[in-house]
Image 1 (cartoon, helix red, strand yellow):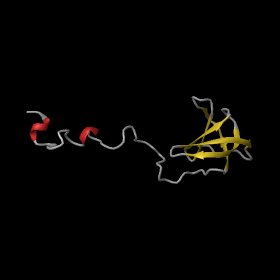
Image 2 (tube, helix red, strand yellow; image 1 turned 180 degrees about the vertical axis):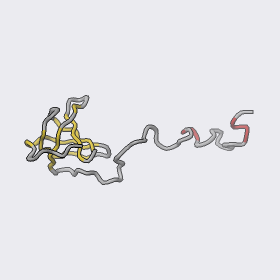
Image 3 (cartoon, one colour; image 1 turned 30 degrees about the horizontal axis):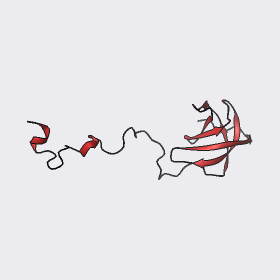
Length: 108
Protein backbone atom coordinates (compact mmCIF):
# COMPACT_ATOMS: atom_id res chain seq x y z
CA UNK A 1 0.00 0.00 0.00
CA UNK A 2 1.48 3.33 -1.00
CA UNK A 3 1.22 6.55 1.00
CA UNK A 4 -1.43 8.04 -1.27
CA UNK A 5 -3.52 4.86 -1.29
CA UNK A 6 -3.95 5.04 2.48
CA UNK A 7 -6.37 7.94 2.43
CA UNK A 8 -3.92 10.59 3.58
CA UNK A 9 -3.79 13.45 1.11
CA UNK A 10 -6.69 12.22 -0.96
CA UNK A 11 -7.57 14.44 -3.86
CA UNK A 12 -4.27 16.30 -4.15
CA UNK A 13 -2.17 13.15 -4.56
CA UNK A 14 0.74 14.93 -2.84
CA UNK A 15 0.49 13.97 0.82
CA UNK A 16 0.88 16.38 3.71
CA UNK A 17 1.54 19.99 2.73
CA UNK A 18 1.50 19.51 -1.02
CA UNK A 19 4.94 19.52 -2.62
CA UNK A 20 6.49 21.68 0.11
CA UNK A 21 7.40 18.85 2.45
CA UNK A 22 6.51 18.60 6.11
CA UNK A 23 7.53 22.12 7.11
CA UNK A 24 5.79 24.01 4.36
CA UNK A 25 6.62 27.70 4.55
CA UNK A 26 10.17 29.02 4.21
CA UNK A 27 13.23 26.90 3.72
CA UNK A 28 16.42 27.80 5.55
CA UNK A 29 14.60 30.73 7.17
CA UNK A 30 15.21 29.79 10.77
CA UNK A 31 17.33 32.01 12.93
CA UNK A 32 16.52 35.30 11.24
CA UNK A 33 16.73 38.13 13.73
CA UNK A 34 15.16 40.88 11.66
CA UNK A 35 12.05 40.17 9.65
CA UNK A 36 10.66 42.69 7.18
CA UNK A 37 7.89 43.78 9.57
CA UNK A 38 10.16 44.44 12.57
CA UNK A 39 11.56 47.95 13.13
CA UNK A 40 15.21 48.30 12.16
CA UNK A 41 17.73 49.94 14.51
CA UNK A 42 18.97 52.26 11.72
CA UNK A 43 17.26 54.69 9.34
CA UNK A 44 18.15 55.91 5.85
CA UNK A 45 19.93 59.27 5.91
CA UNK A 46 20.97 59.12 9.57
CA UNK A 47 24.55 58.93 10.81
CA UNK A 48 25.91 56.37 13.29
CA UNK A 49 29.27 55.75 14.97
CA UNK A 50 30.30 52.16 14.25
CA UNK A 51 33.24 49.82 14.53
CA UNK A 52 34.03 47.79 11.42
CA UNK A 53 34.74 44.22 12.45
CA UNK A 54 34.88 42.24 9.18
CA UNK A 55 35.23 42.53 5.42
CA UNK A 56 32.52 41.19 3.10
CA UNK A 57 33.16 39.01 0.07
CA UNK A 58 32.73 42.13 -2.07
CA UNK A 59 35.34 44.04 -0.07
CA UNK A 60 33.01 46.30 1.93
CA UNK A 61 33.42 46.68 5.68
CA UNK A 62 30.86 45.04 7.94
CA UNK A 63 29.60 46.80 11.07
CA UNK A 64 26.63 46.08 13.31
CA UNK A 65 24.17 48.26 15.19
CA UNK A 66 22.17 46.26 17.75
CA UNK A 67 23.09 43.11 15.79
CA UNK A 68 21.77 44.52 12.49
CA UNK A 69 24.35 44.20 9.69
CA UNK A 70 25.59 47.30 7.88
CA UNK A 71 27.81 47.03 4.79
CA UNK A 72 30.15 50.05 4.76
CA UNK A 73 31.63 51.00 1.39
CA UNK A 74 35.39 51.41 1.72
CA UNK A 75 35.44 50.40 5.39
CA UNK A 76 38.49 48.66 6.87
CA UNK A 77 38.67 46.14 9.73
CA UNK A 78 39.38 47.88 13.04
CA UNK A 79 38.20 51.27 11.78
CA UNK A 80 35.92 53.33 14.01
CA UNK A 81 33.90 55.49 11.67
CA UNK A 82 30.90 57.74 11.40
CA UNK A 83 28.71 56.33 8.63
CA UNK A 84 25.64 57.60 6.82
CA UNK A 85 23.01 54.99 5.98
CA UNK A 86 22.22 54.99 2.26
CA UNK A 87 19.74 52.12 2.12
CA UNK A 88 17.92 49.88 4.61
CA UNK A 89 16.69 46.46 3.53
CA UNK A 90 14.97 43.62 5.32
CA UNK A 91 18.14 41.96 6.55
CA UNK A 92 20.92 44.55 6.20
CA UNK A 93 21.72 48.18 5.44
CA UNK A 94 24.38 49.91 3.31
CA UNK A 95 26.34 52.99 4.34
CA UNK A 96 29.13 55.36 3.32
CA UNK A 97 31.92 56.58 5.60
CA UNK A 98 31.47 60.30 6.35
CA UNK A 99 34.19 60.74 8.99
CA UNK A 100 35.85 59.42 12.09
CA UNK A 101 33.71 58.24 15.00
CA UNK A 102 33.29 60.94 17.68
CA UNK A 103 33.39 58.38 20.49
CA UNK A 104 34.27 54.73 20.86
CA UNK A 105 31.30 52.72 19.46
CA UNK A 106 29.67 50.31 21.89
CA UNK A 107 31.10 46.81 21.61
CA UNK A 108 28.74 43.91 20.95
